[in-house]
Length: 89
Image 1: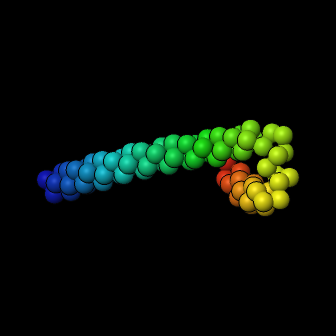
Image 2: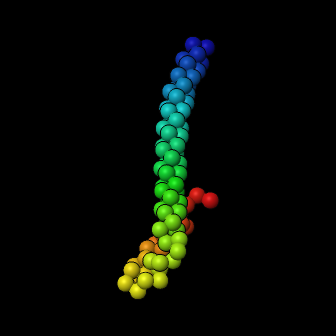
Image 3: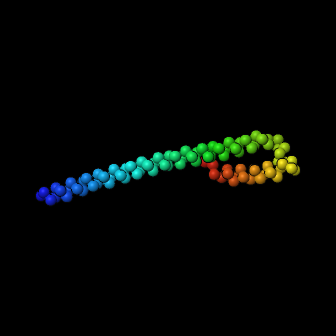
């Protein structure tokens, strides 16, 4: 009977430490996930702000139609379109 009590005590204590460690790991993962989600949200907002600003800059189409600046502006627009794929929808 004493042997059974000792075995159960060891199992309970071991289980307690295992469960406590698993809870700590889960909390760390939740913190990392929250930080990641905040990072993604901020990046999405920055991309969207850049997209809006590009549209404001060339609202009359002046840059896009200019021969000297137009090709560069078109390349910037291509980059912006590629970035737009990474925004949260």
